[in-house]
Picture 1 (cartoon, helix red, strand yellow):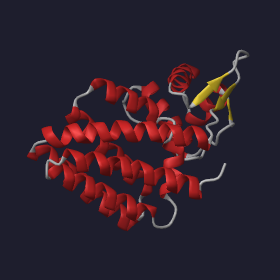
Picture 2 (picture 1 turned 90 degrees about the vertical axis):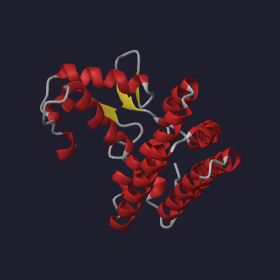
Picture 3 (picture 1 turned 120 degrees about the vertical axis):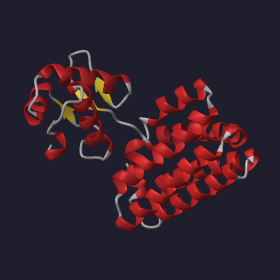
Picture 4 (picture 1 turned 30 degrees about the vertical axis):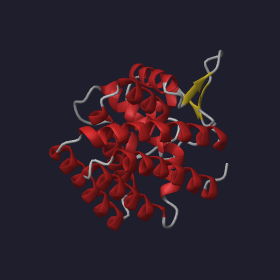
Length: 220
């Protein structure tokens, strides 16, 4: 618990607390099975227990924190088998979304995707993995929003929370970041060409490669 947990600014406090703790979990600084204490978190973050309690409630709802009947709180355990199954489902959803988006997408949204890819290239050069991951999310969010299927969006967002920890680790392994960037560029080109079959295929392949890389490099 270091500077990342020091809350500043005027954003809604509970939201900032939630985002800070979530980053600690996603980036592996709070590992699965780690015990959480409202008092300790409040002290580290220099806030009262009320926003901590609200943040823990949200993280529990997202499956990142587990609360036992005796109110013991821990960072959720999540097996590689669970991760593989979740990514398989997400791959199917991302593929469906990309196929629909390829038909509907306009020049403005294509330009937005290009800007995300350009920034991802800069992150790759600077080895800025946290920002790359954020841009990765934004890239896929554009595709989902253009698709417009609220059920795909809802299910995909629910699944995403379970894989963030493994994705961050997997992208840190040599070669995967470059491969990931190439996959995003290929998806963007398929969308630009309004090719639904190719966009769907490449989106599924992107998730399959993510699964392969995680299973190869990330051990429990």
